[in-house]
Amino acid sequence: MARNGSLPFTYRDVAIALLQPVPCPTLPSTSKRQHRFMEEAAHNPAFARAHGIKPGVAAEFAHADKGKVKALPERAPTRKRPTITRRRTK
Image 1 (cartoon, rainbow, N blue to C red):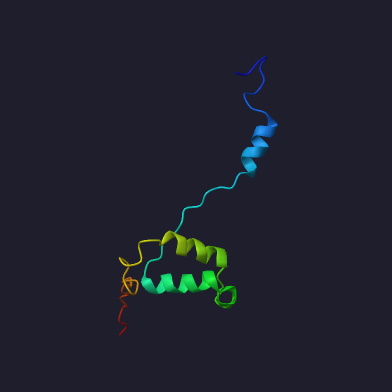
Image 2: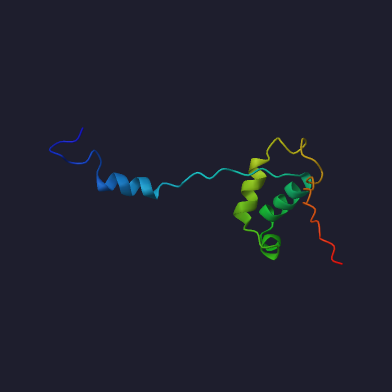
């Protein structure tokens, strides 16, 4: 408990808390194709650099997919694009 109006924590406690790594949510792959791509990028840094992916990010994707690969579709489903209606001019 704080005494004499002092704060319940010290600046050292705040500094230690700020230096702790923040856990990021892991993103699983959306398809088997993406999983294979991320596995290759995680294990081959030259491949990852050629495709503009950080190997660490690819490794996070690969780690998030452990045990879930069989349930993934071969390719991600395509999203329907909204149709644009045009006015006809006379």
